[in-house]
Length: 370
Image (cartoon, rainbow, N blue to C red; front, side, top):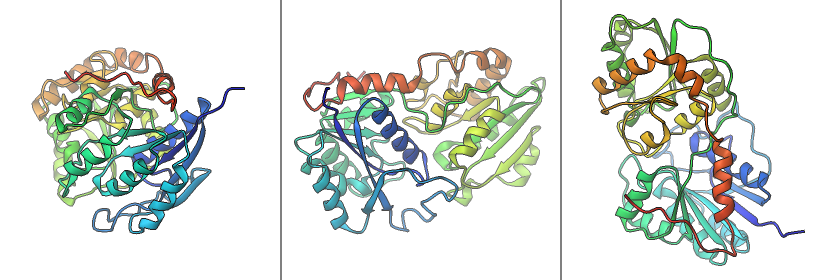
């Protein structure tokens, strides 16, 4: 019987909030399904309150079985404990999300020199500037044996930063169960903007775009669901009322189960990002068979096949996004029929990592910046 790789996955797991926790949970499960023995290590406390002022855990989400909840951001002894345990693993997998975790991750990578050290790069640099972020990114990512990201734009950003570690670009795993249910009847065509409401995600662009749509477009209903990070991003009641659209708002954290239900209840997902490397919401929508309208920023155009799984706007502003919504509305039936087409992202992901996550084979298929 062939020996199975012993893999350590270190990062946020459910019930911690956010798409990264969902992705890490699904990633560990996928590796386990592919035949690896997986040990999971996670955080009791991820961030100081000054960086994250909300409850870190989703009270409605079940805890991931088998996780060792050892890590505390303020306790270097907890970092050393994890580093000591994983030093004998065949493969160590870490998500790179924030430079705040850079010292811990550097310690783990140094301790696990005999292992195949794989870092999942969700963002090369944080959305908001942080001290020493570029230095920490170079130090941590340069110590890995393989970097995995979900868009060529991220791989290019890594090259520009001077990181020479081999890079593999793979599809992002959907963070909720894949349920390609039939869409609800229309009209109205139901639009969904979901996820944390932050400036870079461009809710205001979507609202301005809806105000620019042609008068002869079909009846629309819009759901805005997500936790507001900055009150400046909260749309006023007057602004919403001025739209010729039925609007429903839920300004709160949306759990994974709720997100899956929302996808099933809508026809079209809006992703009007000002800046992005990728979007977990886009991967969730496509896994659910729902088309997406995206702006042409970062890796978003790579994740959507224009005219098949959604529409890519010409520009990242209200005018460009309005034109893209108009195109999507004109072909909504076709898009709903084709949005879930193609090989499953989980299958593609495991195929790629199955070739690269081997401690006995240090080769990787590098991304060539373009």
